[in-house]
Figure 1 (cartoon, helix red, strand yellow):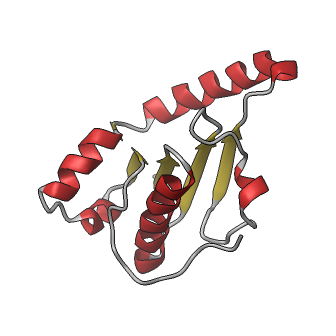
Figure 2: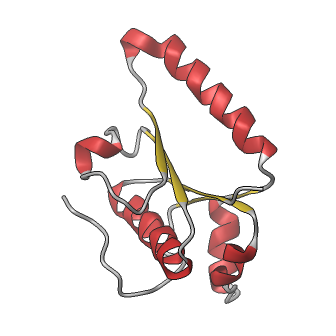
Length: 134
């Protein structure tokens, strides 16, 4: 079975940068592939590629941008990806991650799982590795 580690950052730009920073550091530390799921939202109405240069930290990137001209395609892609991600197992939701951080959870233990999917706006792994190019 192929490992599938997914980060789905949420919130505004800084919150998403926290989440991506943590997930990318986890992936780099343990040399495991990372998939980014980026959805345009009311908090941040921009695509990933509008804000950042492509990063080798991500095995693949899925972007979902609401476009009034192509709303049907957006919904179709989102439903297909949601069905695929649901088959991967449980997704850690933002409040779960917040509670795990407060309880001192060792996020490095997730790397030993075949699959994990984290949706968060939090910095959950603190390491001094830089990642972002604007």
